[in-house]
Image (cartoon, rainbow, N blue to C red; front, side, top):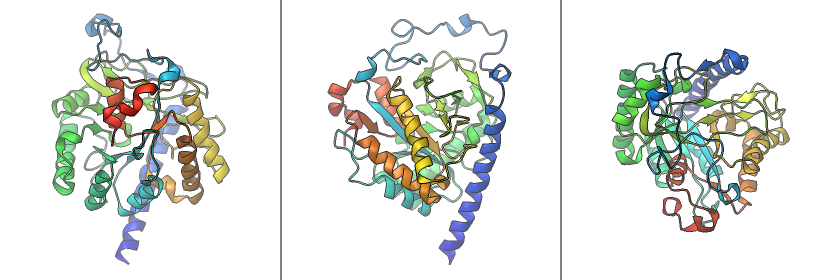
Length: 358
């Protein structure tokens, strides 16, 4: 009975969170492009950032990578990275869904099991279940304690530090392995947030959105904030100043299965799939858009509530299997994506790429 009540409470909580996010996305995605906020305010000159960024000239790997839609490596030499980023409280119910999708027998072409990233907020989190997922190869990252909008550097510092401490204390995950941060509801504290993340030793942020206007449109690769955020700022605030060496993984939007609206979160579409076929089409159209495009890492940014719809879960299960039928597709966590970005390795050598080994 207690477990059933907990599941019901969790579903209500997640439903409210998803509803709030969808309202935000409806407002911002429906705006005309010329009404979007710019990331760089008027009066900030390019010289303030010692730019423009030029890869190999004033930006050198592994510490710096310029924002780009085209990687310097030949596109067909790039492994198509697919990552899953699940947000919010890590309940036992959520863990069971993940374990059914990310089974030990599902392996990447190098023979290592597929994995995902968990962006953890404290409420409803079962830290025993979280620790078990970590030991199974999942990445554990921070999504705050309270899941409130954090608009100051001090609030980010307090919640990032405290939730990382809780994860380490209650799961045994080493602190130096907790290197990723996602802001609640993707609302960030701008430059103050990035300064704090660097101060606390985080490697990357995955909070800033890039919204595609249609299918067959390229998406940006992850990059470092040495030259600020160069794209439109869909959910203010975005960084306007340099934060050397801090990686930003853009939350690249998907398009719904009708290609009518952007979906920053998988579960945030206005046009919801109403069958296995529509859900599968939704997933695979977006995957193929990257796979046959510039091969930027393809991200499923989502809440587990989407998996409570049986048709959605079945479609995702089918899609994962279909992706793994390709010998150039790797389902990895975001930390592994960053490791590849630091040391780009072609497909012919990827099986010996140590950060993806098992």
